[in-house]
Image (cartoon, rainbow, N blue to C red; front, top):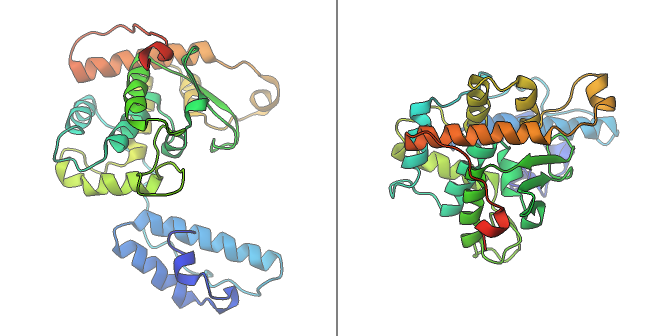
Length: 287
């Protein structure tokens, strides 16, 4: 809305927007290399105009019969062990034109299996340095439910690195200092950095930040971690009456064990040696 719609249509009346306007906007987004972004923009526009019709503010939607400009492959991409090692090590190569914050955000996503948007919007106040947990508040969680993420050894090490460069900011990933506002970096900034670095990461085909979340889930499944625990780590919406209304158990111990096992497996892939977690309090790690 703020990036692609308001800058173009912001001063126009909704009733004056035509189907041709919609098509031209989507074509411009597609041509700049964001075909899936064009699909999401169409969905946003369609919801906006449908809202107007429901409230009797307009009589018709210019999105009627407009098809999504790009075909989407719903199959999740995940990285193999060889690709994981390549990604982790190649990410620090000088040819990869990303900020240190962006690189650490991507690594943290692979380690914790959390959503990109929830990672970059994290504040230090949401990290419990004594209990080694990260709490995503309901206001930031995609499903609107507070989500607690136990921190593994690898996650704690990354957070210590992040603290060293985030300084006194309340955000783990503050936006560049050139911005006057106290804001965190955006998901679009990470997406753009990944696209810019594709030539420097030639071994990673069809790679996006979301691939890292799918990779963590796939690897945990290969380690025979139950799909129920993986789903809880991913903070997927609960299904069924029992899960939604009766079962209040938090599964923190099970999530901790699974993420510790994934941390060890990830280190084995990256370093090529057997690893065993030696978790120290985050407060000590960032002291």
